[in-house]
Image (cartoon, rainbow, N blue to C red; front, side, top):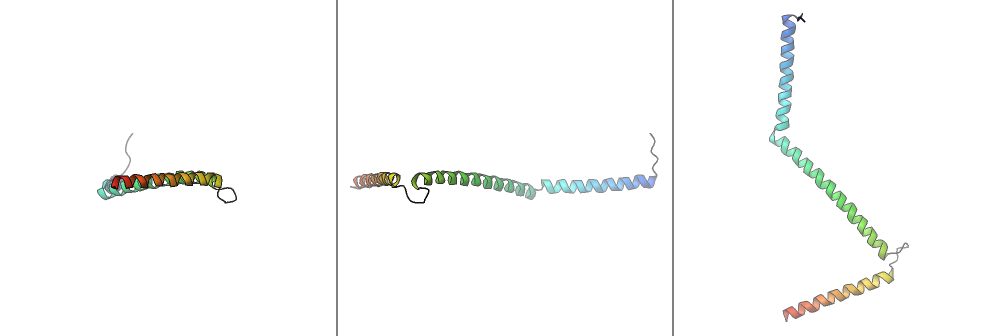
Length: 106
């Protein structure tokens, strides 16, 4: 298999390949530059944080909706048979905490 190219064609090929190599080296230099690496890492972290925050928001929203369904009827009125006992327990806990705090101070 002989090369039938002229010296001018071979030289043009060499010049073209040098230019391609220079472009590749420039691209590699940009990719491994500390600013590029740091920027890529920041973007990845930001994406992960956004994704995690989104999942947390959905989970909290789902939980709150479930709690709301237990204490509010379909018509939007509070379900007193559930609200009153919970409120009484909350008042009792606050009262116990207040009494405990007074004992510690006195």
